[in-house]
Length: 74
Image (cartoon, rainbow, N blue to C red; front, side, top):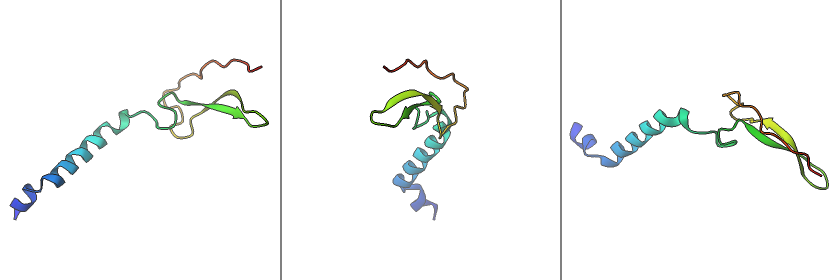
């Protein structure tokens, strides 16, 4: 009975890929902010102006990174 399972190479490959994905999942950067912890904050109006940064709503800035410097838009 074990032979059909052992010869199922696709199932073995899929399980190995799943195991690798689970192992390295904590090291993947956040898909929203790319691991920076901050997202640009835009003021909506006639023109969009960046007014600063807000904490990422997915990861919540787990490393406590400081926000990037902002410059005034004129």
